[in-house]
Amino acid sequence: MEHWTLMSFEYAIVDAFTDVAFGGNPAAVVLLSAAKPDEWLQSVATELNLSETAFADVTAERGVAMPLRWFTPAAEVALCGHATLATAHVLGGDRVFSTKSGNLSCTQTADGWIKMDFPADLPTPVEHDDVIARATTGLDVKNVARGVFDLLIEVATEAELLAFVPSLEAISAIGGRGVIVTAPSDRSGIDFVSRCF
Image 1 (spheres, one colour):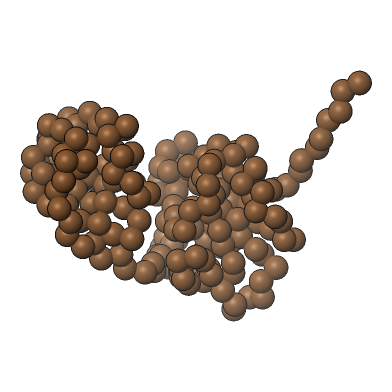
Image 2 (cartoon, rainbow, N blue to C red):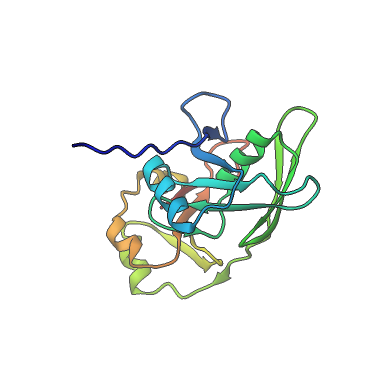
């Protein structure tokens, strides 16, 4: 005899940072009307299998910071910009979210955009050590700095950044959430370009 377990909940998939379907950076948004255990949240994020799934507690009173959490398919994260933007979009723009990274504000502008106010993460210069050197083979590294979550690596040119073929194994050895490699842009009207790993 087969047994089937029905899991039913409402969610939205929002393509953040774009106005084109199937572009930008997708995030799932789940609006919670009742508390769920962490194991359930993680299982849903794993099942949806997007880079992040946002869980917003919509039982919070209007005018009070709404609890918001983010999960990757493997773990909870302390901050996610595109999933926060996606959640604000689903909820109509103007929201203050209570998160592990403090209160995050989203405001709908007159032209329909959503402006986000996040805490600053000022990177601190760090030594360009052997681990970083292995992860950046082939790049002309100018500066290296670490923020709360990510390592920021500045390289000389946009061309070398775009041609860079990373070793994800070497990058994962750096530790932290991720590595951002950035360079001044070669194009008029664009200040810099970045790739995130």
